Amino acid sequence: MQNFSPLPILVHEQARIYGSRAAMRYCDYSEGIWKDISWNEFSARISKLSTSMLALGVQEQENVAVFSQNMPEMLLVDFAAYAIRAVTIPMYATSSEMQVKYMVSDANIRYVFVGEQEQYDIAFRVLKHGSSLEKLIIFDKSVVRNPEDQISLYFEDFLMQGNVGLLPEVQRRTAAVQPSDLANILYTSGTTGLSKGVMLTHRMYSTALSAHYGVFPLSDKDVVLNFLPFTHVLERGWAYLCIANGCTLAVNLRPADVLQSMREVHPTCMCAVPRFWEKVYDGVMDRIEKSSPVQKSLLLEALRVGHEYNVDYKMKGMTPPMGLRMQYSLYESTIIAFLKKQLGLERANFFPTAGAAVPPKVEDFVRSAGLRMVVGYGLTESTATVSIDHLDKKTSLGSVGRILDGVEVSFGENNEILLRGDTITKGYYRKAEVTERCIDADGWFHTGDAGYIKDGELFLTDRIKDMFKTSNGKYIAPQLIESKLCVDKYIDQIVVVAEQRKFVSALVIPQYDLLKELAKDYGVECHSNEELCANPRVVKFMMYRIETLQQEFAHYEQIKRITLLPEPFSLEKGELTNTLKVKRAVLYNNYREQIEKMYEEE
Picture (tube, rainbow, N blue to C red):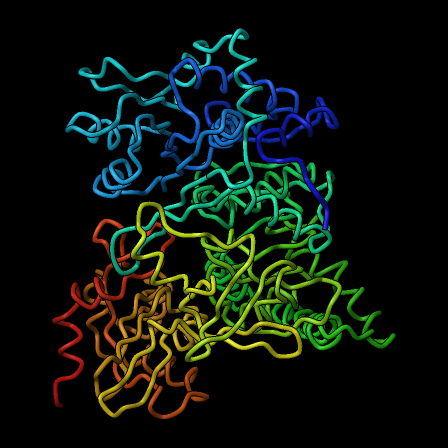
């Protein structure tokens, strides 16, 4: 293990090493260019911001919120707060007014840093309608303040409130930071109810950073694109690890621009969730399908050779035979290089991926294309990583890697994964009863995930709470089924229905444009998504696709009926969490009529 500098001084220590080199990059949309922030500037702005927060009256271990999409300012607030022994609470940029009001009240927040207009408008309504809120600090200078707003400040104006005379107090507080101090409270998305504030301490972060040393081949030569929300523990912990290794962070402001950002930044590393790679897989497969016969043959042959080289040999720790090495080298320098260049990944190092199950076809494709996907498993409550693939050890498709040093793992009833160690939370903020239900008397945190270890690798089976029992007494693992079906290019999202039902059915969000194009080719006229999803021939086609993919399932696990929905699941209707996980109870209620219709006798 490597001991990195503690969070309150981490950036300042790195600035002494790297000076004028770029610590961060961000896209200035007004000029259409990426701009650098040097390590020296990063450090200086943190120091200035720390004094401004003191001038505002932020107390030791006080909760300060950041309600924004990814911006460099989010990291500035984090490290400035750590330096004065304060606690940051990041909120998803997509959080609703109700969610923001709940977190503000639950954590007794006085000060919120907001990103753009949408976050400002929501936060101001919360402030105006009565709460603990006293002041908003606005990152984006183009935000139009409410005419009634007399107390908010723009970020650059707020920085001017600090002064060097407060630096001794900053230094005193920095020296007073204890490993047991809270660093963050991260509110979970809440798939079943109100969010819970997971308490993360400085010890948890320092232990997690040290445990990753040597697992990832990171260096100051890496350029890392950050497009997952910094609010998410995966991107947050990853960003801190990259800072500790001297990497340059390229902060992606707008999630929809990630593919464009990849081609502009040419990252060597990037943290992602499986859904991102599913989209990449769909895009490449669609491109191959539309290629000329010769191009299609070459692309598929390159992926076949890539699979044999990377999956059959390299992942298993075996040396490929000479003939295969020569064949792969040819494709790697031509066709595979072309695919990488189209994505902006020609300088690719490795790509941590977690947050959900990776569909086998998608993982196989990414690895066959010569991209080093590093699959892991973790939770907010475990400071992100529980297990991760080791690039220097055997790796199996479908596993979620090897247990991180310092993390104790045991298995409870129904093979539930239990965790213990210095990276595991001691509980939920102001929720003693919930904490007692999740952490037993021996200190084991109950994850709710089922799994097993084989040959040193952890494999997940399903969420125990999501296991369905049909009316015939059979148990169904919905996420397992969904992950294997959503690789179909015509399926955008799919949610299984089975609890206390006599057979399995599913709600399906199709890839509307692709399906419309196909329908048109077969002479099916559909002028709207509603017409498309209600057309019997279209439904029959989609059912055929599903039946082809689910042949490996047991008969009782197979989907018998489907309903195509004309609109995607949405945050606005409460159907998705801020991390885009489905809220099953909400979906089942919102589409109760459609579900019941699938179970009507024919």
